[in-house]
Image (cartoon, rainbow, N blue to C red):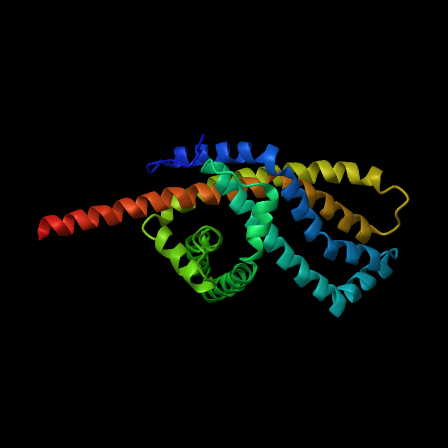
Length: 268
């Protein structure tokens, strides 16, 4: 049964669609969420292996490791791999929501062809936000919301980096405040989950790290554990929310275009 709505929804309806898609995804796509953790972990593992000293030495070793070209090469490869897996998550969740058959392997394979435009879009997205926040805070906030659906456009409509950002802005504009409210509610839920996970890890890690002299290594290990839990619980919720917003705004856009065409015909 399809989760994708057939008509525009209120804010509560979009959030309900988000939760339905999220719940339907967890049991099916958990291997992809774990894969996201695996491809995102090498930079942290590298830092942990190269910052194993104790006390002040750990800090200096960690800074030296972060200055290494090897670290940045690992970091860049990890980012590209994460974009590949995130793209697969979008495709797989979209297939679940539209009641289409797509295996995890098929989603990962389909995402390979979109890696380059997806990475290029993320770079442009980051540059746009940096410019927006450097100039003034408000333009940065406006861009953050209006460009948030670019990943969906790259993955679902095969758009290029620039077209996906422009398309996202066109979809959101006119419903910017409404989109902000939905994303804010979802962001609060994500923040609560993240803080709960961080608190549990903070309580458990001192016992896990018994015999470990380096606080820096313990910190990196904590970050990795939090990353695993967040990628399994939070990432699919956030992507489900953006997909639900994308579906809703597409319906609103198509309805507005249809109304405009009917109005033009009546005027003629």
